[in-house]
Image 1 (spheres, rainbow, N blue to C red):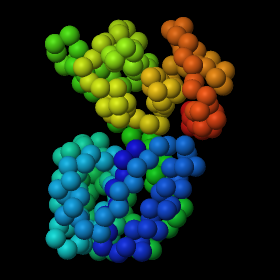
Image 2 (image 1 turned 90 degrees about the vertical axis):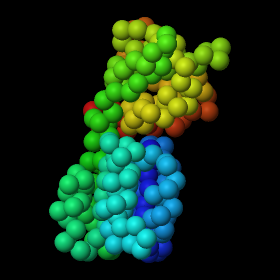
Image 3 (image 1 turned 30 degrees about the vertical axis):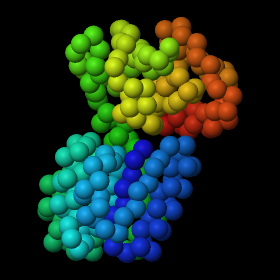
Length: 232
């Protein structure tokens, strides 16, 4: 999960970052959080974000313009605005903003908003394009059972096919939702919707595939697994 927070008040930024980091840790969601007090830096960095919290009134570039740029990079962006100025709400709603936050923000409202954002991200990763056999092929994210790295090649195992793709392993994994995919091994990234049986050190998928969980990942995956079950 790639999150960006942009506001010209450094103390507010750090407070928001701590709460979001705590939420992600408690929900076992891997997360990288970028904070910036200068919106121009974010406007020009070409990074793709999953979630953005943006102040609307800032020097250099206003939050609405920055939001449009970030949405152009990722049309599935979960977008939040930080503002006490209601005159900007019409412009913000055109960008399908999730919620508005005043300063100081309400922590419980923040957490419930992040719950909604995680549900949205789960449902918004509909498809991706993978290069295989000389062409780009559309693949539904939830039809991917697991991604495998083997002998310097990357294989995407779907419910109907196995694609040997030109995309590298890390980029394939990064394009999938971290709320139901998990890297149980350095060579296996698994869609938990297809786990039929979990036995702490290994997974058994619905197609009969058996995947070992790396020993260093077993404890964290165990926590993630029960969090995942609690959401379904």
